Image 1: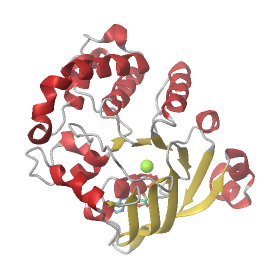
Image 2 (image 1 turned 180 degrees about the horizontal axis):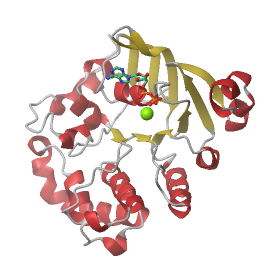
Image 3 (image 1 turned 90 degrees about the vertical axis):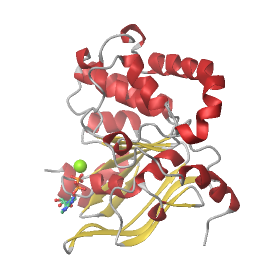
Length: 286
Ligand SMILES: Nc1ncnc2c1ncn2[C@@H]1O[C@H](COP(=O)(O)OP(=O)(O)O)[C@@H](O)[C@H]1O
Ligand SMILES: [Mg+2]
């Protein structure tokens, strides 16, 4: 059993019943507390070992091994159906592996945590389609995302509210939406909605961010800004980015993992994996 006293202390508040459990807000990781005190003493934020996921006998993930370092910006590429989204589903607790180990930091066993607990522990996920609240303003969306577990943090909230406002102001700058703070989110461009949703993750200060095809449907300028944004977030956060746009991958990634048929086919710099014969055959060469 690798659960330490520290992990038990961390888990204590989030084991309380959560009235919102199962709602779509939780599905996108909103309203969760940040995971302070994650044990990453060996420099690894995520450890996946021998992970398999079966759907009616079909192996969407097949003995997958993956290690993400603290502060790393990792890109995951691979053909459609390779298991990229399933991988994110396993990390966030949406799908349970039929086999294998998944650790967040050194001590948190993701396979024993609920989706809500995983989000609270500090893993934030952005889905492909933006899921902002269109009728609410940009500020209100960020404010809502920042609200933490009321039963635990209620006493801290009044005291933190100045700090929380500063946090929102800082995130607005980061995602370049300061000028649109009072606009309804529904009036933003597709790209701006994507940035707002990234902002909604950032106000929770997650240690690990999972982003599924973040630049799909973006203009060239928005894609360029996203690259800049992700590079600036790396170091402070660890990022796992699934993306097909090789120009974008080349602009951001120092380390690329190629997934194929549910397993890691190749790993290395983009240049290294681009030269790999098998990668060319199953993905890049098509
Ligand atoms: N809930 C599910 N039930 C059955 N098969 C699924 C389910 N989710 C994914 N799959 C299958 O698992 C494989 C991997 O899917 P996915 O992780 O979405 O791939 P990717 O994101 O790399 O395109 C695909 O063949 C897909 O059809
Ligand atoms: Mg996918």
